[in-house]
Image (tube, rainbow, N blue to C red):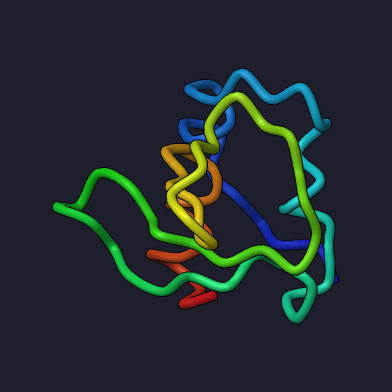
Length: 77
């Protein structure tokens, strides 16, 4: 199921993955564990994805992607 992300979020995102997170099934997205200071998401990914917005943090990762943040803020996933 495609997730409708705003044009503003997409225009702020330099995505090398073709906005795959917006077209994936919600159950296959990286799981958000916490929102950090409103600026970044602490995520746990089922698969190892290489993304310019993702930084390793132990077994979790920090995500600063504007599109992924909007998906979490608007859709709760």
